[in-house]
Length: 288
Length: 260
Ligand SMILES: Cc1cc2nc3c(=O)[nH]c(=O)nc-3n(C[C@H](O)[C@H](O)[C@H](O)COP(=O)(O)OP(=O)(O)OC[C@H]3O[C@@H](n4cnc5c(N)ncnc54)[C@H](O)[C@@H]3O)c2cc1C
Image 1: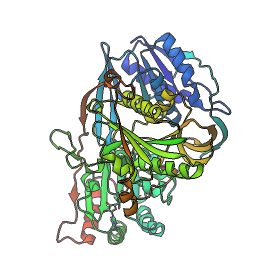
Image 2: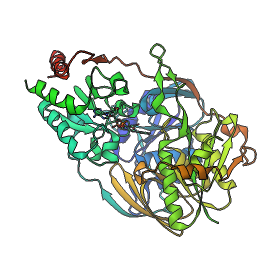
Image 3: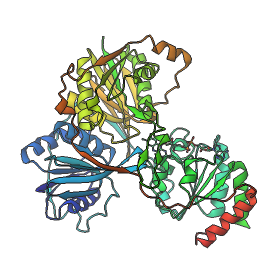
Image 4: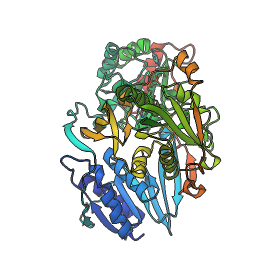
């Protein structure tokens, strides 16, 4: 593989992609682009400039950080370059002129492996898909992209409110799902969490639709991916998109009134029953 | 008349996927086709923009077997559906499907607002909206959670990892929405009956100028396998065991596992 390009919003992410690039080809020529955020335009509007450069210089692989902006820029660039793009790619490899990689499908229920001999491939790379290269981006050439303002005007930006919990650090987590029908019912889950010394997390609908917990509290493929020692899922059905986020937990407990639920299939220990009855019994047993 | 086109994907419901424990292959036999969950929010967003701007609202889909989707989609507030059904689309990827959708948009007179949802429940690759924008040479605004529309002017709020971004743009535009843009109501009996009277128009690949080569997959699928799991799946309260006993057994287990 001759040249690999890396496009990121910041150097940390670029360093992750340096590792990704080296996993594909140890001696590839790396060029890193970290175009600055325009004051009143979209970062994604660097796409035409990237495309023009790529048409002229013909890299064989373009890696883009899988932020939302990165996804948009990668997809637009891929369309203009008439090239395939693999979203959230892992296990990238090159053998001869065949490029292959894995992507998650069906909400993380399965991994799809693809291979291609296309002359140009794009892939987006998650922030934790690879360990950042120890040398950072120092070994790569710094590239620049011109910015031509697009038709979209940015009139305001607001940083997200500071995070109140750090699930990533928690060793024990009690997680609630739609088995809880009212916000005040969460008190029971909090009581169990307190008894266990655990943080409280949730499934996506609890955070996104009901907004009972902040968004950084929901676990799953589009939320937090965590590796606690203990994960207790209460009233969570266990759809693949959710369980993807706790695949690497050491022990998973499922409490659900439905004996057939998928969460039970993805747990080490299951108690079938309504949380209204199970939680008090569990709190008592933990405190005993 | 100006039109809003909402793209939707007719996907198999992933909730009914079962895994063959031996081969790790997916068993999709129980999965029924449905309008991709996220696209339901996209369709509802189209309904709201129609209300605000008076545009006509059409749906577009493509695939190997999508004609049956029209009734369902039409019950979600669309005035008409255009679908491209062709066996050649069975294996097509994002490169091909975006070309087909873009060509369909161009084939429908007057579309100046295109709506996609951020992803589909099967691949969730999150490429179609931005790809369409590029192919149609329209501005792309993705991950939109709030839409303010009046005439041709749109004020859109995007939700990104680091916070939110408010943008202004005029039609023509491709808007890719996240689910928070608004819940999709479940169609009522009236909507379902009404859907039968609305037009479902078949488009052909040749008719919209797409060659068979353009939809050939650009990568070969080597395998689709569920990761191996090694969870114990031990039910602690089989019949005859009380919840108190099960709770005590769990605490004992967790201590034995070195967790409590
Ligand atoms: C592209 C995409 C991405 C997604 N990403 C995520 C993600 O990152 N994270 C995520 O969580 N979801 C995600 N989802 C949504 C996911 O598919 C599920 O819809 C969601 O996880 C379901 O949440 P839930 O288990 O809380 O609710 P439900 O599926 O409604 O399950 C509720 C459960 O509670 C049980 N229950 C009800 N009452 C009681 C009671 N009294 N006691 C005990 N149990 C009870 C029921 O038996 C049921 O199993 C995504 C979906 C899509 C399409």
